[in-house]
Length: 257
Image 1 (tube, rainbow, N blue to C red):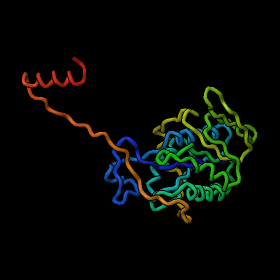
Image 2 (image 1 turned 90 degrees about the vertical axis):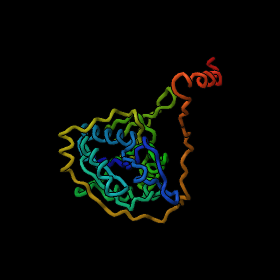
Image 3 (image 1 turned 180 degrees about the vertical axis):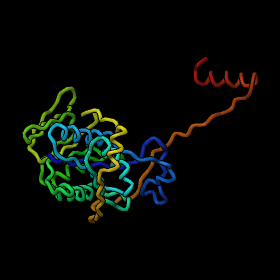
Image 4 (image 1 turned 120 degrees about the vertical axis):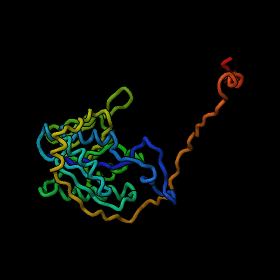
């Protein structure tokens, strides 16, 4: 079995974001943001590792992005993925149709060096930054494969993927014949942490870089807007006993006394 896992390098959401001069992208340098993968994609990589451990085969992680995406790919190589592929861009955001087209081309090309066909493509259900979940569906359409989305239970038996989706307190079950595209949500499994031996092995695993050729965009980004931030401030009421009357007034205003 050959499995491709598609991931995206995204900014960490813990810091304060700053936009560039024309408000078309995030200024990662001014924001001092780090980068990571979404929990959905960590779960996708863990699913691929578990399936290869159970059935044998090869796992490949693919990412459309900049050369620095190798950092996130190495993290997944450290947990058991066999090799990586970076479809390198200039760092600009590609729309879902262009992203799916580039990744589908790599899947259709087969496993690097081996040339074998992929049996399964696993993605996170949605992108952690843009929150769209079109790429997996568009890849399936491009490849002519069946697709199941929002999967929280996955097993493979005799070339058939059994996929479970949570719907309220119930479960929907779909069975699709491989090859197929499956998008997963966190909760499918518990991703393992990279071990020290795993990180050492990851340094020796191959990462192939290929040039990404962006097709004519179908969508145009006009600008990004940041949500309004509730600015907080502190007021010095005074020092010592002189601050007591002001403090009493504040308590009266807020209804404490």
